[in-house]
Each structure stands twice: as structure tokens, then as C-alpha cells.
Image (tube, rainbow over the protein chains, first blue to last red):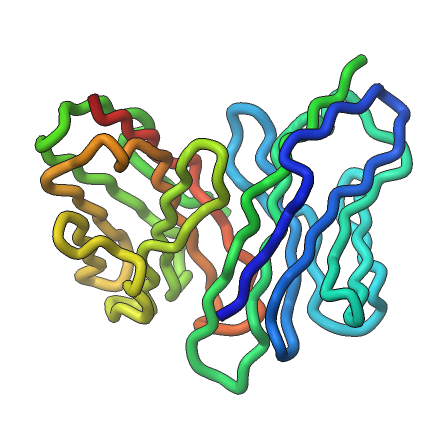
Length: 116
Length: 115
């Protein structure tokens, strides 16, 4: 079974600082990777996803993530954070199986607080 | 398109009481998920439906939790009797592809407090 680790539980940054949130997964095969975000008072929504191709994927609001297969990582980055990026960020993985059911597994989340 | 609808948004009950949550997925989405999110943790899958059939309920505490999706559209998750540790947000999500690389669309969640 797969697992997802997010080592940063709570990150505090000042506006304009750069952001990198770590995500590592454990699974022996091919996976699809996601970052979801939950803004205060709102529901979980997709930030970006990686299925195949260019390992550097761009999402909404200036976020990007890089899939490094050798490191089993899918870290989320943003060059300059804004106060509105204050939210909780979840990494998720789903094995890319040969048909049939595959389970989505979420990490424990990272709370990002951006100070104006 | 309309989103995933959930109700109630908030529920407070005493332990040993029962509670039910309702979810209406996005129209046409065949796959429906119920997740439990305890404060400080990531969402944990409780049960997944494909149309009206159960695909995965391996983490559903079946002695107290039940879920159904009788007509393959909306779904109900029930807890009876509730325990203190059931305090959590119950998230419903849906997707239009049966398996593999799916993007989940989540509802706003139902926050349960068990006293």
C-alpha cells in the first residue's frame, strides 16, 4: 500500500518569501500525484496534478511542483507568497494501475501562514 | 457545474447517539467517496462507491458506520452509536472516472462534534 509524507506541519512565512513544501511518497510503481489546497472556510480543491510528461507542472495562482522520480518526491513551490496563500496544503497520490480500483492516499497536510 | 452538496454542515451530538450525513455528487459522476478528516490529519478514506456498488470499505468501522448509495446518485453515511473519537469533518467527493488518474471534487464537509 502506498503512503504519503509531508514533513512540514506548520510553515510561517512573510509575504514575498519563497515557498517550498515537501511531499514524499512510498510506492514501488507508477503514480499520479496531486496537491490540494484548503483555504480557510472553504472546501478542498485541486491546486495542480502530475500524470506524465514534463515533471515540472504548473498550477493555479503561481504554484508549481516538481516530480523527482528518483527521490519519490513531489514538492510544491511558489517564488513569492501572498497573504491570500494562507491555507492548508495536502499532497495526494494514486497508483497508476492496469485498470480496476486504485485508492487515493492523502498526506497529513501542511498549514501555511503568510504574515503581511 | 454545480458542486458536491453535503448536509448538514454542522452537527453536535452526545456519545451513543446516531447521526446521518447526506451527499449529492456532481451530476454524472459515477464514483463517490466518503472521507473522514480528524483535526490535524489528512483525509482518510472511509468508503468508495462506483455507481451503487462498494469498491472499498476496508477502513470503514462497520460496527458503527454504514453507508449506502441506493440509486447510484446521492449517498448517506450513518454513525450509530457515535463515539467521542468520531468527532471530525466528513467529506464527500466525487469523480467521473471509475479508477486511475482522477481529480476529486470535494464538498464543503459536515463537521461532527461528539460530546
